[in-house]
Length: 107
Image 1 (cartoon, helix red, strand yellow):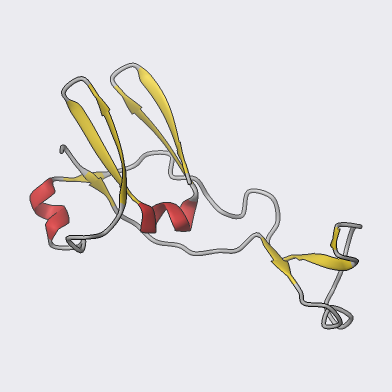
Image 2: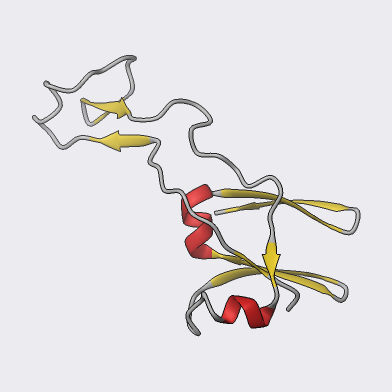
């Protein structure tokens, strides 16, 4: 494995409010679930994609990651990459490239 990606930033884009508890929250638009409004917490593009991922060697990543930490792996020929699911939970998209093949890693 040639590398692992690490980073941080956690954001939510929408929040669902349980029945009867939304009346005091700001509401714009008409999106509802079971008649209750969906409140927009963050605007469009508020969760940034990782556009230029930086990778660590397996030995370096071993200092930061747990042995059982789940990753999403991609291999093309002899080149392999691992994307931490913890990282993908925080950014949702990594735009990457292996050789001349563009990749959109999503979670």
